[in-house]
Length: 268
Image: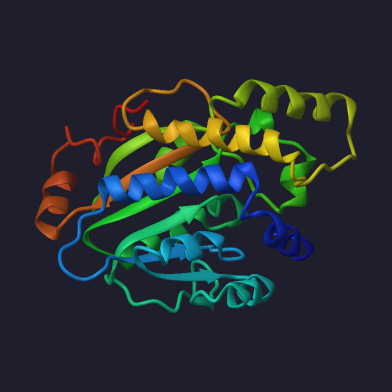
């Protein structure tokens, strides 16, 4: 991502509706799906950016983050969270098989080697550990803003599923995300593509009452995302669990297993 964008994100990510709503959704999913006994669960945030998610995670979990940007790590230090420099997928200074959950939140679109990076995330998990991953959806929504943020792609359903089709991984949730605000956002992006080429609009904090309303609308998806197939959204979200070795061997050998099926599981 462009280095100057980190300062902008650092200023806004605590309050801006997109960041705040997504954090509420992810934290709800963690509490719903994570399985731990005894000590506080260990959570790794890969591509942790400026550290606001790490700050929220640290209230309930033993959290650590990694990011490829020295600027991002510097902002994480200002927040007082544990963040380390990395280079996905080749160098991640975290112990394999030691985390109860790993987050990949709007990270893979920034990486050329997205499949290898997803494998690294799974390698970090303990057996029965949880992966939560979000990516931007649909190449037809591509605008110059994606280029400005150094995205390599937006994801089709099939491409995102393919990243999760690993023999030791079971998909427990796969759905669209940011659906309630999809229509105005999609219209805005299409308008930009057709009539405002060369203009890049980045983050701006809406007026407080509007920002609060947008946060509540987006965050409300946490109440139904696990239960209701959502036909369209600005992003995809997946929750997957790392299978114990015996179960992963069975899944790989069973052609009827959702994790082994070439078309992936039946998903929303």
